[in-house]
Image 1 (cartoon, rainbow, N blue to C red):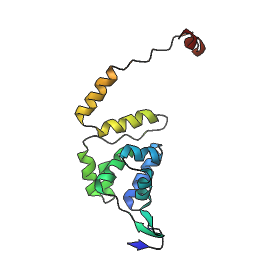
Image 2 (cartoon, rainbow, N blue to C red):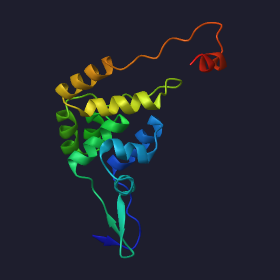
Image 3 (spheres, rainbow, N blue to C red):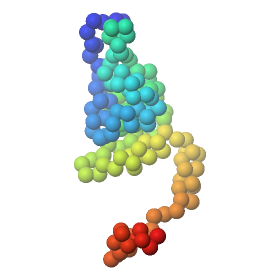
Image 4 (cartoon, one colour):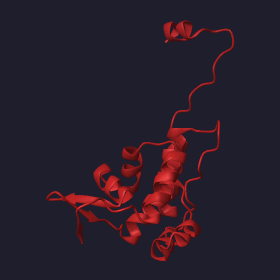
Amino acid sequence: MSESSRPNPPLEAALIAAALKNARISARKAAGLAGLSDARWRQIVSGYQSVSGSYVAVRAPADTLARMAQVVGVTPEELRNAGREDAAAELDELGAPPTPRPSAGTYAPPIDAVTAIMAALTPEEQEEVIRRLGHARPTPPAQEGVTEHQRRRAG
């Protein structure tokens, strides 16, 4: 369906856009975590793509919308309320809770990104990541009274 004016985004697209803003991550980063290009993410969230100068409405496939929802913390229930039962069912099948939305003062982008990635892994893959992290060298605690400059000089 081609239109001369931009179609309004569907309800689920507005839901994803609002959750992205609340999650305080960039669309590019969210797209990467969801396995999409940032251009495709923008098309889905805006509800259209431009084809030969015309605007064509875009409706995300259920599995794609579910991955997007998981990254930004949209719940299956919110997807159902937006009329996307198919995507809600896909999100339920992912088997992991959506990434929690950060509350004021608790925003930690690297931790949120790792949480989103871990949630997309199978339980066996999660165990392997945790096993490998257990072998990682922990960062030593800061020594009281020693400045950063002194620590660097000590090597």
